[in-house]
Image (tube, rainbow, N blue to C red; front, side):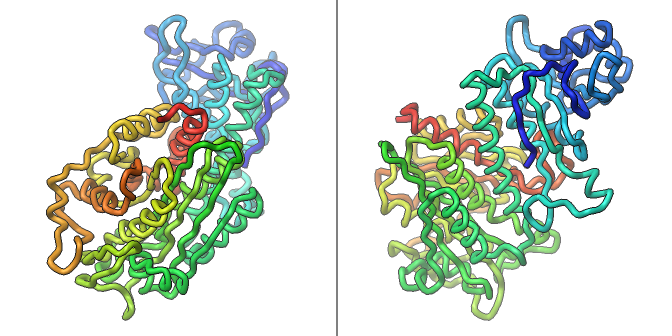
Length: 509
């Protein structure tokens, strides 16, 4: 990952390959934003006019390069759009700063060092700029460890090597903590992105579990792995039912961070289908190519637990990674089969492509046995949620309205697009089964909500629970934007981390 430093240099004196400044949309044209005063001075106060001549408007996502005048040490100035200029005395929103910094970092791929002279009025703004730049600089490097291939094309696409954050007061404890937090969160988001982007022949349930064990040793986490024998013996019929058609057997991983002074415990449960063919209910042509991303929920949970540990949060956080590969074969679960889930409930499998709820059901029951204060599951669960909310927004369902609202507000705070969704009781009847306690499918209309109702059946009595369906934003297939790359995005991690922070601070009931 790119290096991040807090620099005492000014935009004029910093020795770098480029200086990043902000430009906003004003009522009469582009407006140069605070932080760029020294750069504007080098342009004799005419920088806004120069940018307008070059076609810049200050719109979000714009990036305009221009040669630096003689008054700057850096040879290039990069102006990035922040969107509409705020009202007088108001600051730019943190998400606008985050996205602008991400746009700059992506634009400067192949560059060694850049100074970021964006508006940084306080430590929270500094955190947003640092986080956006670090996330925007991400590039999946096949072969591991971010190592680029040794050719010119790879060198040009290599991530921005060093980010110097200007105006961030390096000796101020709040700014230093903000930078450290940004580094930790970005590294963990990028850890999850790497896992999602890995080819499915390189990441199966066993290798995913091994990655969790390696991280556990590095960060002092307790990791337990149930292999196929332990799952069979323990009665985990959902996970075994999904994974039995594959030559790569399933795993259930428990990864736990504990703090000696913690008063509350959170449980995060992640869907980890390392490849989803649909099983016997095979997906149609054109829907298989990106199904390596179906473990993005487990990757998010994994990364969030590690982040909580690295940040030293005063809360216990336990992650449950329900890992399986959903493949068709002579041993695969068939439509019409009945599975006995962990905890004893039976499920008629009407569609083997509705497999995520089966592995999550087992994991939710197991997580409930530890009686946490709250459970949040994360899953690329339904295409219905994508139809409802699009490709950039995840849905939030819960058995507690206040908790659902809190998660929505947290997601909005950290810059993750989300929307609260209901759990209509009338949809539950459609999952009634004549041969089992219920089926894994209900009505087609409202399918994403029916999936939430299915999961609710496996949450322990009296436990606060929420379900995040990240099917839309977990994997981005179009051109990158802001700090969002093509491929795995790390969706929901920042929401989970902020939830853990607020719980540690006692801000959640």
